Amino acid sequence: MKCIELFRPSGTIDRSAYAVIGLAGFVIKHNLDRAVASMFDRPWGLFNYWVPVRDVARITSLQTQDAKFLATLLALALPFVWVGVVLTIKRLRSAQLPTWLVALFFVPFVNLLFFLVLCVVPHRDPGSAQPMRRAAALARIVPESKLGSAAVSLLLIVPIGIGLTVLGTVVFTDYGWGLFVAVPFTVGLGAAMIYGIREPRSLKSSVGVACAAVGLLGAAILGVALEGAFCLLMAMPLALALAAFGGVCGYLAQCRPNFSKDAPAFLGLALILAPGAQWMEHAVAAHPSSLMVSSAIDVQAPPEVVWKYVIAFSEIPEPREWYFRGGIAYPIRAEIKGKGPGAERHCIFSTGPFVEPIEIWDEPRRLKFSVSSNPEPLEEWSPYRHIEPAHLRGYLVSQAGQFLLTPLPDGGTRIEGTTWYRHGLWPSSYWRLWSDAIIHHIHLRVLRHIKQEAETAVSADPSLRTSRKQPM
Image 1 (cartoon, rainbow, N blue to C red):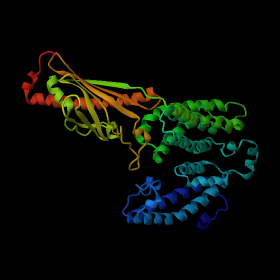
Image 2: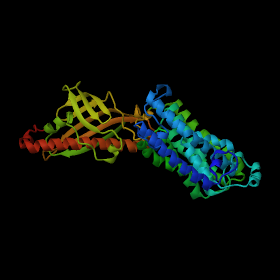
Image 3: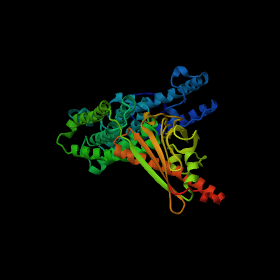
Image 4: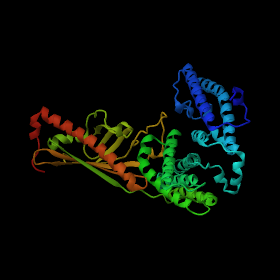
């Protein structure tokens, strides 16, 4: 292909040339962008194409230096954009696909799937498209090949999944059945039906495409800063299981006679499921019930010694556990203001303090407190500097806590820590598996530190072993 033809929208281009030129253009463009960013003393990576300037909500808020930086990037991008649009039109024409699909070139993240589809859809002769005119409009844009039909199904269904996710998290702000059950099932079902619209596919491949659609949806949600990696990791087992079930249902739908003609109606009905479930859930507004987690540990020190480190303890070393290092909030130290009922305990976490007014002060047996202020339960890992999904506030709330000290026959003490909490996530039984496990590990981090401090104090002063009062 002559260089001048890169700028002419007439003609066609095959998929291999489109892929090679597109990849080469991206490499050149990315390195030029890195050079420009270095001139302005800025870092530059792949995610900067979505957020070139951070911490700026509106274009009118741009500083002079930011405006110059963006203007330089824009001027540099224009010839690449023109070449990309021209080549995409040629590729669409080669594949006998509607040229208006070139609009997807400008849709963030979706354009990556779009480019992948154009790199795998084969060339079609103009005459081969005629018989398809009698088929459903949706079927006309889906290739006959397995790889091509899978790519197109992902291209079409993943943006719909993003829209449904935005509807649930931003519009309805509900993290429940509509989001975690209806959306992955709908995405899996839709992907499998589009995949088999030209001809019935196997059960295995239908389920595979359905699961791939939900996996790509998760990557897209991370890429557009709707959610962080840790919560996606927790949601993925449930989402993949439901996507697989949707894939099975999509496979069964393919077995119906005249499925290719009826598929748009089937797909339309399926896509009503998720927003309908989200709206009903929002209208009902179910109230979460209170849950309880208890954890215990034995300490080789009498209750009188342990009590001092229960009400307040020194700073705990940095965690080594992957889940804490991955963003789950973890306790750092505890402070106490006052003594007895009405005193205020502050348990400092990595995301902020829990404020804990003391309700029962039964020294050295029982310390019970309510929780008047909760910090964020985790700090989401994201390629962006900071994101704030709605579930970080008000969806996992500690209500009360308690330490119960029980003397042991050998002179030691059993400490039982209990937390009463609620969460606004559904299915509740699924999310409780995660929340109970997280709170249990938080308990153990505190209890092990108390154990270490109390036993160290007794080792340093053996007389403390006899400081235990008479039976209680």
